[in-house]
Image 1 (cartoon, rainbow, N blue to C red):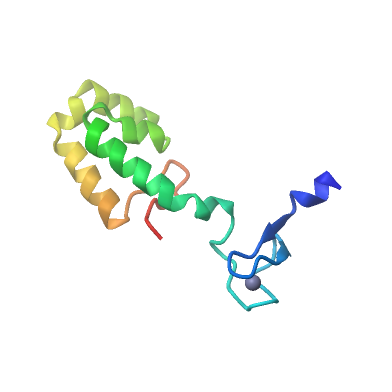
Image 2 (image 1 turned 180 degrees about the vertical axis):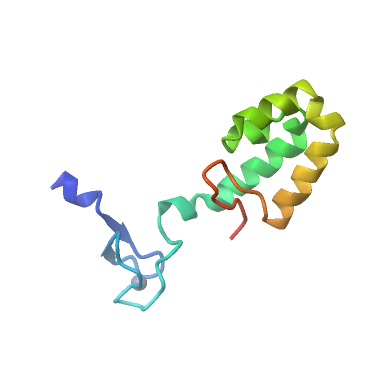
Length: 109
Ligand SMILES: [Zn+2]
């Protein structure tokens, strides 16, 4: 029973219980790609990354947060490449082109 529960998602628009493998919602026809839990947390992740970069970016904290540990350490040691690297990262994050270490874009939906 519990094992089955984890294999279902709920349609963001109509709340219908669906298989995680469903591509569109049969109830409302809504495309489900990007409606799973991961993408629902994306606006949050975007905001957190943006704030971390703005306030703690010279310490590379936004890089640690998004899984780029090596780059994070380099930025920490160089104070964000004299803040220039941090500024570039900030612009990339704002423009939606920043990716985490898994290659997922961090952008506001
Ligand atoms: Zn639906």
